[in-house]
Image (cartoon, rainbow, N blue to C red; front, side):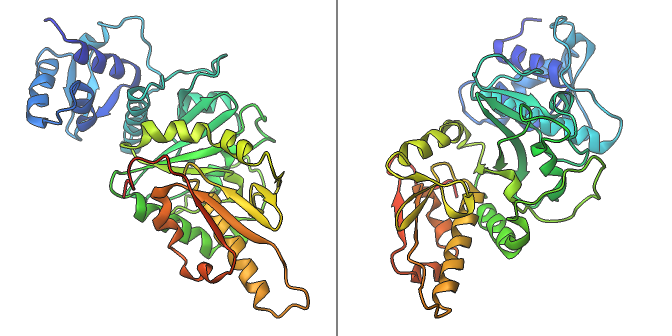
Length: 361
């Protein structure tokens, strides 16, 4: 049997990750981007007919011995457990690795010496960074220079979020600063971006007094499984939201976000309290948000609401400080979440003009 490059690419992926959902397999075979599921199914069929791959009853695709023999030097990066939950977890990691490699971020098992972006699956990262709680839901880590970003596939945003467990990725006591995460990337379904962003911010704002506290205990024992909606904590540092369609563009912006903050703050004074902004040019404190950092929006809304409350309290000497935010055009719906903040006189908004499209919605 003579295999084409796209078919070999799929088999090679499964040799490393064992399982992948069927729709992602067809997407990987789609070299020209036609999206024709029927035509792609005919490209996939020879792989099962010749016993390289098998399509399982649960809809996933697994590699067989004949397919693995095509790549004898490749060892699996992750191993399969026996339960349905373990299988689903493996499929999620495999799907994320496929997305990363589609956009030029290779999957590796160890921390590289170069600063070129790579993706390390969650099972491999647990071997590198001790102290990660077993209930955390991250699929892996994107490493690029100093950035170590935990990646999550949150679907439509309704996943059961492990607030405390996810914080273990940011531990320093049981791990080290070399393995401490610097932020998160949440990847939601295309078409769900606006709804997911607003829900996460709203859930966090309702409990912001607790969640934005910088006091956090590091645990070395499993925590109870949580049925909480996605909420953000100050411990997460940065929480970027994107979609598969926008990932290629957004990952570049995410990795350049800190440089953007440094560039904009050159003529101001850097602040060391993220709840008050990135830098100050009195009387304004600026929040610089070029990459849809949801936690930064929570800080901004919380700061403005706190200032409004102070100004309404008839203080003898009302505070003179005011706030400004720099944001992407596609983030306009987020800024409209709380109409009352626009009542604050002097609030300033600066919109980046580099966006070609309005919103991933």
